[in-house]
Image (cartoon, rainbow, N blue to C red; front, side, top):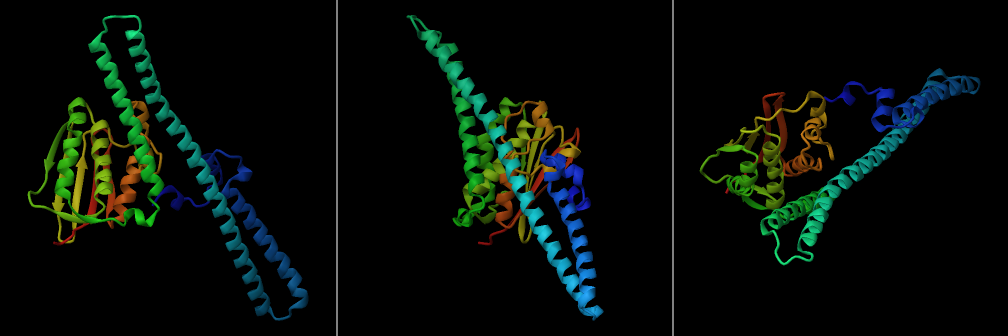
Length: 319
């Protein structure tokens, strides 16, 4: 249960959440409409008392008006809240994407400027220096490609046919391929990856590309948010009706204040900002959406200073 469930009537915190004046926030509007509802019921009660002599009939009419006004108020405030949420997500999207685009584009431009100035009017060039800058261009180009890929996936997550193309996928192969793709990142980050995976194939009925993307996001996070010299432990367990996959790291853990938002779109935890870790805040959102659409579950356990373990389950495909 999150804070919204515990505190449904929280006018001031709701206004702060959306960064808007109190008279524009949904909770305040709902409160005002509640007062209007009570006033209307009293008005019709005294007015109806003059013309309707049957108390039970008057009570039914007042109850009907109160019910209608309540649902009208709820519908209006929910619509306003959704519009506020969309506007906030749009603002957050523009802020994050513009920041994520600016950094790699600036690095690419500076690298190209250096290479051009290094060659201009010179018969000999510093090949090693240029090689470093070409590597920087390649790295930042990859960052842009990853960002665009995430945005395209998020844009299509609500399309039903996006998950239509499924096949029998051996999750053991998914783990092996992911480790192959991220072994250089792990080495560069001084992180050791340990696997505890059964030898026999374990099949799930899934969209292979999306399942790989979801799992890769968990592995990548466990590497980049790990400590120097830390370990990542990947385990796969087979149960009668499902598989259980665990990705454990030895990083700083997820602060308590961040935990309820961890799967939200564009959310980046405070640890990410403190460590200047690159990212869009879409990885875990995509992972949860993909796993859920495949009939699975995703959750985590964390302890500050000791690390985090993400768990996913998926229905087994019996072949």
